[in-house]
Length: 146
Image 1 (cartoon, helix red, strand yellow):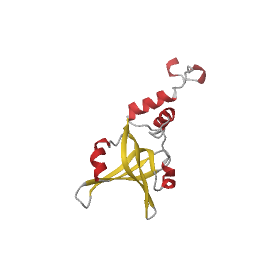
Image 2 (cartoon, helix red, strand yellow):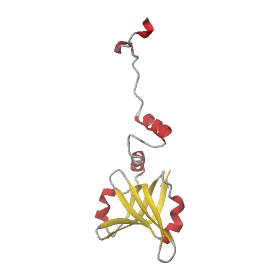
Image 3 (cartoon, rainbow, N blue to C red):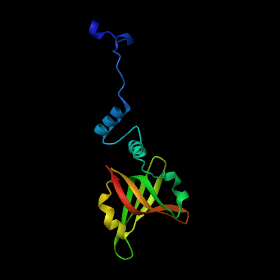
């Protein structure tokens, strides 16, 4: 029976592989996220073309006391009530190089909390601080990247 015979290599058609963009689009469509790359990688390439300057998270500790811009993918968030009774938030972000901590004090929290979507990339601008050996970003502005 010919329909039961095993398929050999010579019988398989030659097909071109999908482009990288097509594979990523299929991952995003099928899974709702990128599986084979970090979700910020495509955005980083786009940002290089637009010449948006951000520092890598791995270098955050080298910028203590300075105002920086950094790309971030939200990892965790914890809302708390400050001593004055106002809400504020501690947040962890990541980029392709490291995970970093950030804080939104009450006045900044009121301005930007509605932008914090867990499935989005952000450009964060803020002051790098260090206390007891822990480096964090005091967020001044947050801009979602769609």
